[in-house]
Amino acid sequence: MSGSTTAGARLRVAGVRGGTNRWVVLVVLCVSLLLVALDATVLHVAVPAVTADLRPSGVELLWIVDAYPLVCAALLILFGTLGDRIGRRRVLLIGYALFGAASAVAALADTPLVLIVARALLGVGGAMIMPATLSILRDVFPDRRERAMAIGVWTAVAAIGAALGPVLGGFLVEHFWWGSVFLINLPLLALLLPLGRLVLPESKGCGDGPWDVLGALMAAAGVLGVVFGVKRLGAGEGPLGPETLGPLCVGAALLVLFVRRQRRRAHPLIDMRMFARPTFSVSVGCIVLAMLALVGLELIAVQYLQLVLELSPLETGLRLLPLTFAAMAAGVTGSATLRRVGPRRMVAWGFVLTAGAVLLLVLMGQHDRPGLLTTGFVLLGFGLQTTLFGAYESMLSEAPADQAGGAAAIGETSYQLGAGMGIALLGSVMNAVYAPALTSVRGVPASAGSAASDSLGEAYEVAARLGGPAGESLRAAARHSFVHGLHVTLFVSAGLLLLGALAALRLPRIMECPPPEAGEATGEAREEAREEAAEEAPEPGETRPSRAREPRPPQPRRAPTAARESSEAAVPAGRGSR
Image 1 (tube, rainbow, N blue to C red):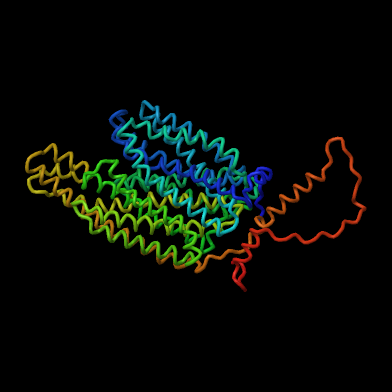
Image 2 (cartoon, rainbow, N blue to C red):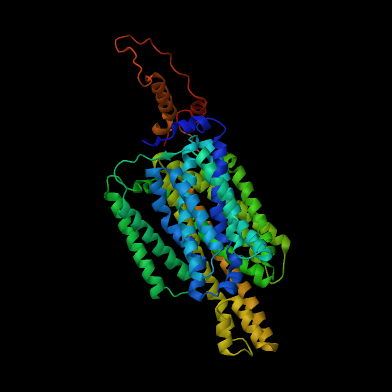
């Protein structure tokens, strides 16, 4: 590898390569990720308050919700590869500043347009932060066993942020106003910006050749088109409608051209040969399948808790906390599990456990069963986090160190694509089962039944306007149809998860810990050489006698470092690196 560290002095002071302060770096990276993950879900429960205050149109409300994930997903590859070129720490710090400024604007927005722009800028900042956290983690933890532990913490924090978003958002909306869901970012960013500048190491990729600006823009536009089209499908638009088919076709075409361009370039943004490695490509596919099965299901589950069980937003968030705690446990224990059972069994059994949890939740009905829900959510959180941990760790370990930013961007993009596809696919399944049952409810006019078929919330509003026996009949039919649609969706989700378990069988059986790659193995040697050169260099105005003619005494062989000893000890006898 030709990856190089560009802040040797900072690394030596912080002890990142070999001391305990690399765990301080991990804490900073995890708090950074927590901010981005929180903002992905914290606004969901504040949408009614935003609607009442700003009075957005239907299209404006859609963009208020979707601007952040759309822009973030589109720009991950651009900023991930840019960090490989100009420095991952630099991109991360700029992302902090932009995220903070956008949070302040969003909190004080007084029109829908201002809030949409602020949400888009939050997406830009999130796209700068997310791949940088994972690529810096890859550089700071060259030893795979320690890196596995760090990735376990990282993935657990991502789950915590996504799950705590509705809880925190519900609390803030109930006690303050909707803008407070954005203001909570500012104190953390005020701490992160100077702390990150102080303790985070700077690292780059090889930097050979010019940065492919056109390719980066093609990737951004392609991902934006595909994700936007998929989200329109999830919103109930027809697959052949111009607002769905157009972005999908344009986005797919741009991504195909991007791949062809990268294959032809001598110095590509992303080395497409990584996808020829089964471990890398299968890991990416497992991330997509896991998110495809989960996110759409999670959205429907939130509707079930609020509209069928009639829980408040805060109570809904609290019901999801067992899922968060289980995900934390899976992340913390993931490193030991990976070493014990290997990537193949870990990812495959994680999928199977998640599928079992999903099938258990089929027993949910129109009445609250807290024990069943808690058990199902615990198994769901543990199984899914086990799968994502094994897939992320395998993907990142398989990628070359100097392309860590691009690999992290691919992983995060696949995460976002899987989430968007899950909402579209499972939402379509839900609508296909839910809507037909409401078109012929006895005593309900056909127009009212058609309006109620849009969503369960809409059905409740129509039933309230009808009143009397007709309203009660429509409300009962809508609840029954929604629960039936939820059961069918759970079966589809379980099928997708079992498909992921089959795909995981192509992963390696064991977690191999080869010696550090060339670029990583010589990192300390390069630092020591620079230190020796600095010590031997004369001060300004000082001359030293040349030692070129003096014979240099033989130097004793330097003892291997502890990190190298631990890596070499982990290689099984007779087994080389893959």
